[in-house]
Length: 444
Image (cartoon, rainbow, N blue to C red; front, side):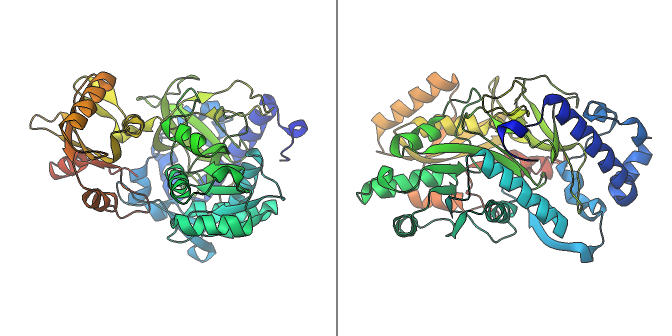
């Protein structure tokens, strides 16, 4: 599908494309997927009656536990057809494995090619990849393949080492970077300490991965604001997951990540697995289109977002997703207030008195949620403690427990996970639920 304004499909064309590809998917699953064949039989699903995405509510949903526990029942090809194994990071639970065929890798490159086009990429760009391309990280190979298809230059530098990142920027003159937003802040801090002016560099844009840089109204959150204050580059937010093998990427308008309708059907569901309307939070539930190895049907990601279906000023008519509001299984009910970790992260990032943090949630003796903030203060002391507590009380209207820790202690907590991501949220409720035999969710 060409990526030029004149060729953007209309809403009617998108419906037609998705209806056709959905019917192809259902036939494929019914022939090749052990998991979905059993599901269709158990629930007496007549796939001939599923004509469009609006009919999907007739089919039960699938979740992460199903994929973790019955991984190979989802495989639709023989194992000799698998050329790549990818996995989720497993930050807060067991990782999920996704097996890809050669055709799936071609689809993955196509997906990221259009994502980079959406983010104003061209063959004239040079992208510095500040992320891992190993450890079964699907995004790394997706970015690399998409940039190659774009015909742009690639610098595979990997994560970390701000000094080397700046040396490479100075030497090879990339026009764009692909990085986690919090690491971009570290680049800015290093530049300031080293008397480097980021705005005189060759970099003009950043593809931001893995963390929110916007609020749900699309204004920059504190992380996005801090980056823009220190480095006047254009920021493009992205949202993706290993399971969907597809990315939602912002265009220049910055009004949500665009759906690629030929690659994915997305539903946002309420607690009863019913679709919610636009501008309403719901759980992102995906149906992959064109996947050969491990296609998924009505797979609940656990991510809470909103969708927007008004036409974008860029000319695309595809649905757009908001930044992730939170993870369904990470929702905190604290003293009558509902909180999601990203909102707490934004609040703590705003505070000049706090250098770094880890948020911990656990169950008290009567089973209610409690919050413990592990904080690295900028200047320890009673005055700082009073300001921090007063600010939290004013913003949250409730008072979480606070434990002040050293940089070394906090670093150990950041590295305590087994996944690729830095730990910022520890959910002790999972351990308690598991011990109590309540079957608590493991999360991503």
